[in-house]
Amino acid sequence: MYVDSELILSACIGFSSICVAGGWLIKIIRGIRKPGEDIKSNIKTNKTTIDQHADKFKNIDETLDYLVNANNLVIRSLFTVLGELSANNDVNGHIAKAQNEIQEFLTPVK
Image (cartoon, rainbow, N blue to C red; front, top):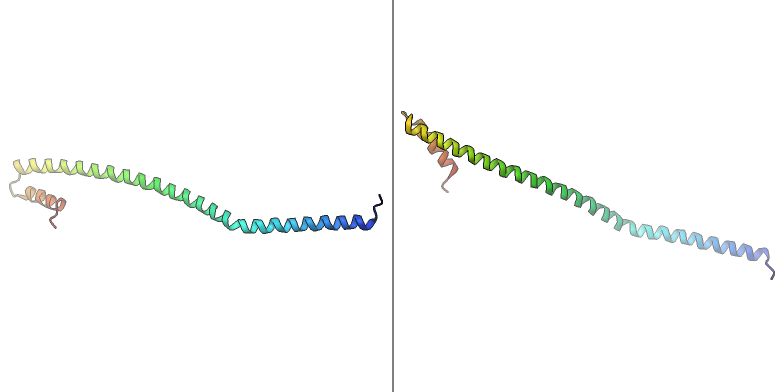
């Protein structure tokens, strides 16, 4: 079998053409897939941010619940003190008035 230079040159050109076409095909496929990959990355980042915010909201809700309970305890203590003071020491009626104002503020009539 005789191999001449034209056959070798043709084989090299064919191989080079296939490699160039393959390279362009890979670039085209990557270009087509890139928007989808960007969206997936963006969704992952957004989900992480949402999860972090959900944890912060949970902590804020727990803190608010604690503060509401603490505030209720302070108000009950204040009513107890004002009740005792108005029963025993309220000569001018100021303590009873303050107690009524607090009661009206806490239970508004609409």
